[in-house]
Length: 269
Image 1 (cartoon, rainbow, N blue to C red):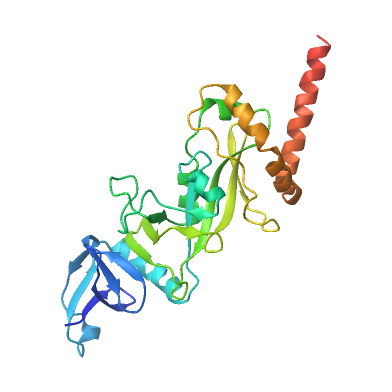
Image 2 (tube, helix red, strand yellow; image 1 turned 120 degrees about the horizontal axis):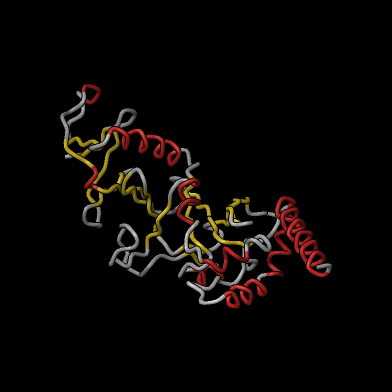
């Protein structure tokens, strides 16, 4: 007997999948967390169709899923993943790979003991919010001298014809089967921290996505010297970015002018 997921705008046929607790839409590689669903009565618009019927437990999730499904079917769905420059996966990113926490092929949440290869993703705003993390006092202090690259977001096309598998866990998280290689994802934006404040800039796509990335930022550095050394190795990358980002170039120019003014004032006292 065919099973259907009923939403305000859709009647979607699905089947059980090889992943426990996850269903799979018949029309493509889109999975849904079964724990978010509940059985329901046959809707009036399905009177001529026999089967089992399910709906989301949350009305808000129904609306969010319908919007995602429309974009996925139109092959316009873009999902985003954000991470700080000290993220554990940075070394893989430098090699052009975006990987999950482990090798376990099961679509579930990250930061658990699952060790999943599936990658968390979300809207660009939420991804940027997640990315602005792993802050430390030495990087913050450095940002008062000049803008410092703190966090990054990548974008991933995930439409029905993309060839990628995604799983709807809830209206706050969709996971993507990884790992992905450059070309399957793109650099999207960079957070520059200046005078302690965050500024998100679009990635300048006039540049190749890789290998033009900065070295991994130290995780929980123990001294300002660690950040100074790291930031020194980033300067070639920063100069490449600055050439295509006039706003960043202006922030860096102002920082240099402020440093020169402070030096002059110190020399006259």
